Length: 493
Image (tube, rainbow, N blue to C red; front, side, top):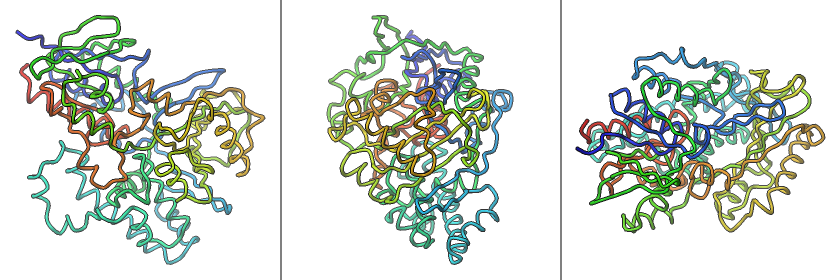
């Protein structure tokens, strides 16, 4: 009888979610992770008395996390304490304007009215439209399995006409609000999937609903507590997690998975494999070269999403004017995205994101200090920029920008570390260092996103941000569930 073990490659959030679903169904599961710790892009770094989350920093869609624990017969609250974040984000503009995206709608509307009184009705109409997009697209593109033609045919025509697929996000924003400040604020949600608001389909305004209407959460102790909680639950269910165990290739015979081979030379037989690795990387690096060469070529040539450049800064001093999440907009937002997706270079000047978890968890920094996570959008790896030789000057330019906004920390840095797109590629297998797989700038790419079931190898499934339903902690949690459910239906126990 074929070995019943299921191997999960990668202990990112999607891989751990898949393992939890499979173990809860009684299947034996081994998770193989190349790094020393679980979490994938959700990492942790500690140095000089500071602690930083190194990956995701904003958590939405709390019900997706709750559903994972409920599926396993547990309660989220026994593993994580999720605290509401308010303001959601504080936005700083070059002209000195400051806007708090507030949990309170009346407070938010006060600020909108101060920008432009005519925008109060428009902003409310936009929120209603974003909620409508969520209602229409949620079951198709977020909460269920990858949609089929039959699924699309069941959508009422009036809803199809309301999906807003052929405008860009920025065009939709211009329809609803006049204030350039508010348009920039709403446009930032495109970056949650590594896209440009001037190119991505207006359907992605659904992201605004998830944050502005439903809220943002912070796990007490830091974002990495989510990875720890998933690992704890997985191990309670009997999942074997092996860190520092890198898979070199997936073994395929007669079109079906037979096992995996590790860098050590060890071979593990498997009934099925869930790859929590960038789908393009799986085809390019892990599958035998005679498996679907045409698909491999197509995936490697499709435009990837954006990436990110991160500075982890241990800062001496306190900055009470900063909220937990902050955005410093550049003077030319549109040019930034041309830099990213046309010229293939990091934007300069850039819109800068700064978060400091020490504002909520004081133990994340020594007394009198803050732990800054500074991030800017970056292009996927390509010939336009060399991080090894140009990274230092770019880092210096970003700190100079913050100084121009009134936050000159260049003489106050006690600890520092960088994370470039090249680090993302090496540490997580992200193709070209892209954070979210295929680019969402092409509206058709929502239909091209790789299925959670590999069409070319029986018994191979995908979980993570490069497959359905997409990137972000809640989405990859859902993707792990989709991959597991497909596997459970299609393989014998």
